[in-house]
Image (cartoon, rainbow, N blue to C red; front, side, top):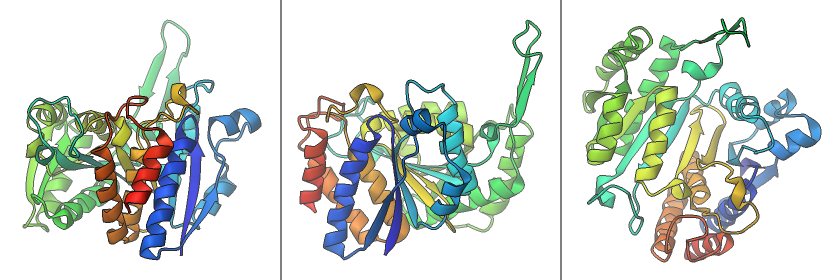
Length: 348
């Protein structure tokens, strides 16, 4: 029995979660998996009604689950930063989800903006450190709202945080067993303290993994090679901020936000899985949004829980559905949101 917490969230989040759950339930039936789903209301609508984001009591309850399945957080009527920091980042930090895992994979019959690139050319994974760096909110203002205002935002890197992320990436490259190559993406020539710590840690941990090839690229070079030669990459390990940026580029080269999923991983605790495209509020309740990112998020969740056969079956069925779609873009798919969910579930 897997206890799964569901946070449908805002905008199109509930729509794609509905289809993701439809597929998970079909997989559960086929592979004899027991799920217990529990809904949580947190998001923009809940905040506007109650003034509540994510109370500590809910965090304690969420610790009892095997995983969290998230739709999207983000509401146009809520000031930017409130929901992101008080729900998303609070979940990641409080549950110590120190790895953000982002597969970048071009599926057959999906159009990429990169000329002459095929599915075999775009198939790598970004391992992003998820609980440190500029995102912890360390800093403040001096003389705010005056002409002499000063804003300070501190970049934090700890040996403990960096090493556990780097070690996870080495293990992942070994387990993935594709190219067994791990690339560190950083900016050691400018960020000479925090990223020197990343570089030294990377080099030291690498000695324990002689079977994994290592490489280094500055973040600006990484973005260039992702566009020019994405086939060079197998697994990339990087910082919180750089990972946030390059994974959005990754989503574009794999065909768009409609099929990009990610996991916030605590290998020893509760992990959270989500489509990365956001709440897309302009498409709310139109039944036109692509739910495949949520389907792939469910696939990642099953894989992380150890249900590899069910995860592989979902991916295979989704690939078959992709072959029947006209586009991955909302409203241009040739099918409705619910029809695509039905097709993947039936394909199982």
